[in-house]
Length: 536
Image (cartoon, rainbow, N blue to C red):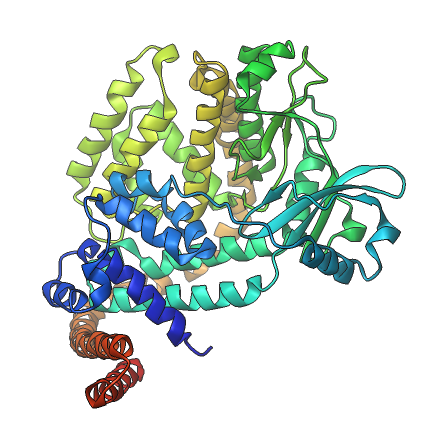
């Protein structure tokens, strides 16, 4: 698609205002980029006395809701970013002004294909909530069922396409220019975000997630998920039963309803382990705004969950890796743990195995010797993420969602019942799952299932071994060729990026001057340099 030049210039203006160039990793061209930044007047008037994380947070806040949601995703990536950055990004709020009710009504009627009064006997004009993706209104269907209607914001598709194009462009050039950027995989992070934001945009995906989770817990006393009215649900509209629960962070109302905080907190942990290990589909956005407590069941505490747009799912291989990691920790076999991480492909550079193993041991062993009631999962996760970043180890996004959800569960649980022991509650469930998947019976079944496949491959093994040895013999020559090509590409990319930065600087400065022959010449030179840099 065509790059949104106007939006890119505004992003450049905000980046200069908050001096984001100083956050870039070390590189020979970094001082030059910073010097070019200070030629733009925006950088002269930006806020002072802010930390790096606060500058990044405020810049994303100024860039609008799509960048805000991207910052919220980055806040979970302690395996990639420093703690100061992630702590600041976690304070980003996804709250925007509501759009006019006339637009909401018109969009709902367009999605329904009929007047709103045909479907709703009552429709409340005042929105219950308004966020960057959608707005929520309450009402009632013709049969009297209390519902809420979630309608996507107008013009959102164009805004998302525009801002994602800017993010992809920036991530691509960051990776091309800075060799160290490949450790943080900015393009991979942006593509992970693309998948998440598209999932939130499609309300039918949220409906499918909610209905699947509802069926899984249909007869469970642990969790209630309100039914979705699929006949009224489209990509832009979602209609679901309204719930009247107590917000999970309203501890006083929970206690006043006669609900035992200890049982409620422990049931939250049980729900998480059931979703991950029994059903392999977990609610990955369990903040207090989406989780409620049923006031009608004080003797058997029950959670109520909404907004399953962000859901996590671990594949068979992902669960296998997770199981082996847990087994290695329980057996204090840190060498095996290192092997699992390396073979999983999470490392972006060669790893010093001995130093990595010692670092893991230094973090995990003190935790294992603590009394169970003193163990906290969140600090352990944060330490492991900080350690992973120092070794350039990046876990796939599904594991990040899993860890973020477990940290939220522990935080919510301890806010309800400060003495919550997440390990004692979850360990029996985890051990049962591990026995089902890694016990003697499970191992025998796996061997029986694979035996025919191994027998069929046995005659081809000599040829496969010969081909492997031939590939190893040619490997040094192939590596030399690859290194030469990479060196040539890196030199070319550096020249083009330098030209592109200079072109954008000239173009931005000329637009700010906005008059005189010098401004016209500068703008023309800027356009030419930028066009040359963008050429493949």
